[in-house]
Image 1 (tube, one colour):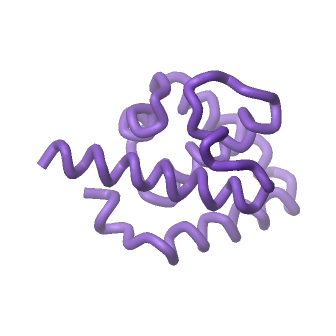
Image 2: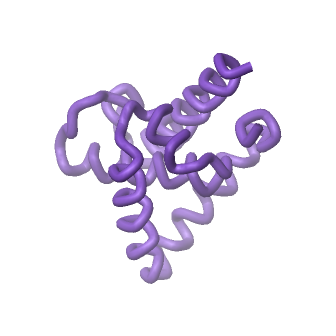
Amino acid sequence: MVALKHRNDRNGAHLAAGLVGYALDIRPEHILETGRGAHDIAKARHVSMYLAHVGFGMSLARVASAFGRDRSTVAHACRQVEDKRDDPAFDAWMETLEQGLVTVAPLSKLAA
C-alpha cells in the first residue's frame, strides 16, 4: 500500500511538472532534477510543487518526497507562489493550470 501511494505521488509530481513544463516550454526532466538549476527552472519547480500540493491535496511532506526535496523547500515554494497570486494575471494562469491538472488526473487516485 505504501509503495502504491509513493508511486501515485511520484506520478502526480511528474504530471504537475509535465503540465508546467509544457506551459513554460521547459523540459519536465529539468524541473524534476535534484539540483537547483537555472532560475526559470527553479520557478517552474515551485509552481509544479505548489500544484501537486493544492491540486492533488498532497501534504507538504508527500510533495517533498515525490520531488526529492525537503519539506521546508516545498513550504517555501508554496509561499512564493501564493505571494505571486496577488497578481491577477498570474492568478488566472495558476487557476488554468490547476483546472488542467485536476481534469487530467482523478483526485481520489493521488489524495489517498
